[in-house]
Length: 238
Image (cartoon, rainbow, N blue to C red):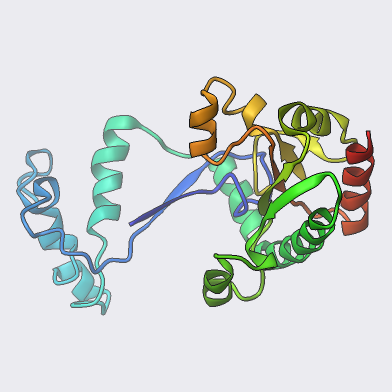
């Protein structure tokens, strides 16, 4: 099972909060290591989730998926987790996210292409010490080509030679780019983790988390690539 946040790229904006669970369906929840799923559940009259909703159960058979995939975890998440904790997305948030999903391929391709161009610009800038983006090459380039050959996404980090103070100054100097600690938005967002989200950590902890003093996080949006570069250029020159 994989967990994901729908507030990010899936919706295409930061206007709706939501998350999702994706279950592959072929995991053996009946091994005895997961009694909540394999043993009788008193709340549902002795129902055994894996026996009924697993890949070898009657539900999978009715869907033509017997022996291949079930929905044990997904059903238990709804009937137990949702029941006990109440984390139910609102209908309007679900609507906004579903609308965003309709333009997902177009947005991600545009943002990936723009991110690569911006990363190349920063890589050559005299005030930038490093750029970490799979599309530029490096240790993750092979994984990028294997799993997402059309683009390396909209999110990357880079470091400033001036360190902590340079990082704070940069994020305070952008005009069009938004100083927001979100990511995957339709708008380009910038953040200086060391002085923002990770400000209460020690320097050692920040470095361990990939949020060094000089690190800037950039989430590329749908604006014109030249406008993004122009805003970064003027901010770096200050």
